[in-house]
Length: 360
Image (tube, rainbow, N blue to C red):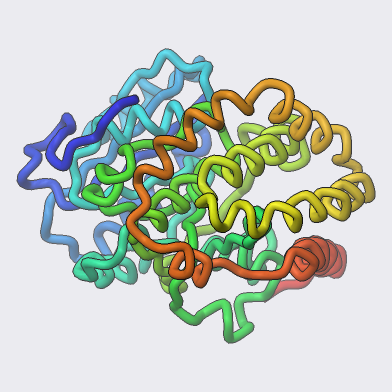
C-alpha cells in the first residue's frame, strides 16, 4: 500500500503550497472547459495569498485533454495516467503528487461557487478537522440540494443529508459536524490523510470510496464539518451514468466492503442483524426503481469474490482506530428502518420536485 508522507509530492515547493486541488478526468475536456474557470474565480475571490497548485489527472483520455490544458491553462499541472482502474485509482495519482497542507478533491463535472474557498478556509485552523464537506446542488434544477453533509447509519447505509430538498430549508444552510464529505468536492487535511493510509481504497473504484475514507478518518479520531457556504453545482454521474448498471453494482458491492472492513468488532456484532434485515427493504426499493439487477449482482459479487480481501483490509483499517466504540457510534445515525425509509422518501421527494419543475 502506498504511504503518503506529510511532505511528499511534486510540483511547487512543498513548504510553499497551502492548497492542492486535484481533479481526476477521463475524456472530460468539455467539462473542464466549464469547471476550471469557476475554480479560478473561487481562488481569486478568496483573496488567497498562499500558493495553490491545480493538478488534473488525465486518466488516459482520447479527447485531447492534455494538449488543451497545456494550451489554455498552462499553470495547471497535468499528470498523464495509464487509466482503466476507476475513479479512486485516478484520484490517488493526484493525491500522491499533491503537496498542499490541504487537498481539495474535485470532480470535473462541477461548477464552483465563487465563495467556495473563502467559506472553507476558516476551518483550516481547526486542529480537530480532517476534512470539510461542501454543499452540492443539482445541475439544471435551480434550488435543489444534492448533498449537505454525509451521514452513516449503524446498519451500514450511508446517507446524503438534504438530497432532494430545497436550499431554502433552514437545515441545508446550517454548519454542523458530519461523518463524510462527498468526493465530488471535499477538502482533506494532508496530515490526516497521511495518518490513515494517504489514499482512497482503489478496489472500490467509484461510489462509496469517499464514505470509506471518511470512516477511516473517523476511526482515527478526526472530525468532518459541513460548510454550507462552500457550494458547487454538480452535473452528476457524467462518466458512469446516473442510473447505469455499473453505478448500482458498485454501490451495492462497496456498501458491504465498507461495513465489514470499517465497523469495529463490538459495533459489528451489535448491528450485524440490523444490517442483514435492512437488505430486503433495500432490495425492494431497488426493484421498484428498476435497479434491482445491479443491486443483486453487486451484493453477490461481494459475497462470492470479495470476502477474503475485505478481511485483509479490515486488519489495516482497524489498526487505525484511536476512538472507542461509544464515541464512534455517537457519530452515526441509529435505526435501520428509519434509514431505509429516509432514502426511499428522499428519492420520491426529489422525483416529485423534478416532475413539478421546481425553480428557486
